[in-house]
Length: 384
Image (cartoon, rainbow, N blue to C red; front, side, top):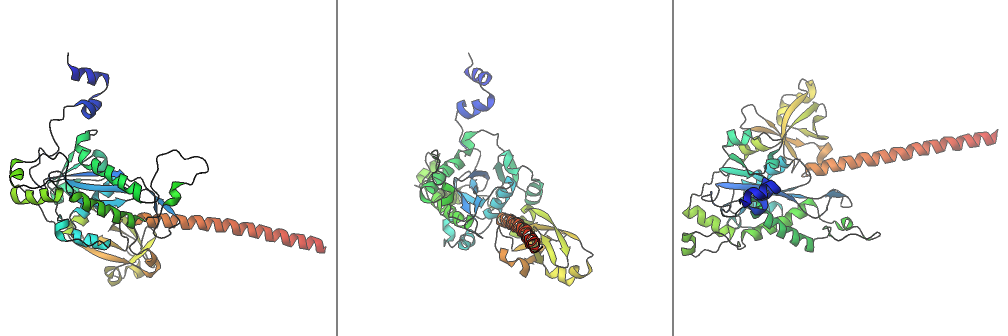
């Protein structure tokens, strides 16, 4: 009898692929060198973070994105954000992938040399789960940047294995080291809520994650399918060694792309409002040289403009030019300067908090007015 048909009819094709399918191929098989295929994946970390604008407020759990080079298992791009559309996270990780990592680490106070994290290139093919690019038109990537997108069939555990094994260790490490991590045990009534232990901001959590990535890139890979020449060259299978060896001895297809052009194609677009107070977007006010030069704020001919923004840092927004290859920068005006270098999610969170506090104050004021009237009435009545 055919065992395969039996299992599929009893459970499902999906279950069969996940649990029973023969594991003869490995994720590296169709990949012939660094930079050919990379894989995008995301997971939620078991930890709560606090707002950098107000550490007494919990802003939620971080979602970690990683892009891994399938050939060498090197993590080539990362992004840590909060809840948001996953294509946005994937795009931010792509932007990080082509960034110079020495500069990137420096922003987080981490000093590295180019050799420690040498990748800043676009791949030929991106493997992504269907969910990761949901709601994003992938056309820009394919047409303008010449990158192929492959959808893995969902539930193929071994393809994601490369990424998920990393995250398991990441989660374990984080849990035992950082306050605010989620403890699985059932909480008795009256026990302290672990969320109250949250002390890390998004930036601090990202620092931890960068260190974990640097550690992964230098760690021996278990059961890596070594090639004959690798064994002859006596290389130990760490992602960084495999990356360097692959570039030297295999087709290392490393395409460098202008970061501005990449950003124009992958950053999210939005609509901004133009008035005498400036260019308004998400409740923040900006100004640009072009707007001042063309007197937008005075004659009010321009009411709305298309802009591009980077949710990781709202200090600037960008007005793309019609040729698609350049843009004008808009900087925060003094009114909104408190949000310099803030991520969009923090800003939205803070604005919501402000309006909640305002509502509370208004309710209190109304109550005070009512009390005052009653008091006056009582005095007048008494006098009569």
